Amino acid sequence: MTNSDSSSTRSNEKDGIQRILAAAVDEFCRAGLAGAKLDVIALEANVSKQLIHHYFRTKAELYVAVINHVSSEAIEILSAIDYESYSPQQAMTRFLQQAFDLFTRWPLLAGLYNDQGVYAGEHMPECLDMISRSPELMARLINIFAQGQEDGEFIADADPQQCIAAGLIVVIGYFTNSPISAAFIPTEISSAENIARWREFSVDFFIRAIKVKP
Image 1: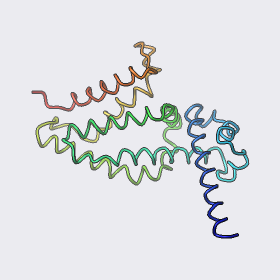
Image 2 (image 1 turned 120 degrees about the horizontal axis):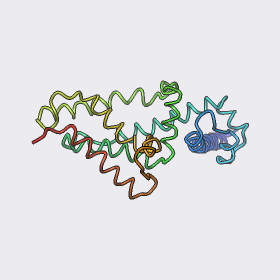
Image 3 (image 1 turned 120 degrees about the vertical axis):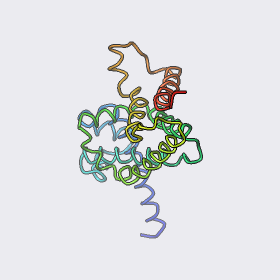
Image 4 (image 1 turned 135 degrees about the horizontal axis):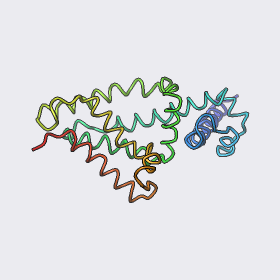
């Protein structure tokens, strides 16, 4: 085999894997690990089911690859922002807005998120990029939050890590918990207008909660 042939083969393999992962993200987000069908993934990716098994021995192995793929891209996007160039309030706002936008960018991501809730996060340890990079991102955000406390902008006795976690829950909860909340408080989440409204409201709600009252 010539170098050209070898390069072409690697390129085709990479393209095939990427198409499988893209189709698998949609299917696992839609149906979860238990309900997802490899036949559907093969059809959407325009590959054979046998090829999927060539790269991923089992459906569970493909599921882990999907979680790692999505979490890797998410942590890359969240880490790329130069939070240190903003004021503490602006940095916290930017972080939560970007987290919200990830779920807007991937509308079915809430399904994958909730599916991991069903499995008690069993597959999250496989998210190697997220595990290796999230402590660095969290350390940056905690330092910025602490700077806001030192400046008298944020509540002094608030725990930065718990506050950031609470902010994420409030923001992401729009996508993951709205169907349940709608049973008590009627809400409609599909329209772009309502999504934009909650993006603004949830982030502002968090910022008001951590700010020192005048």
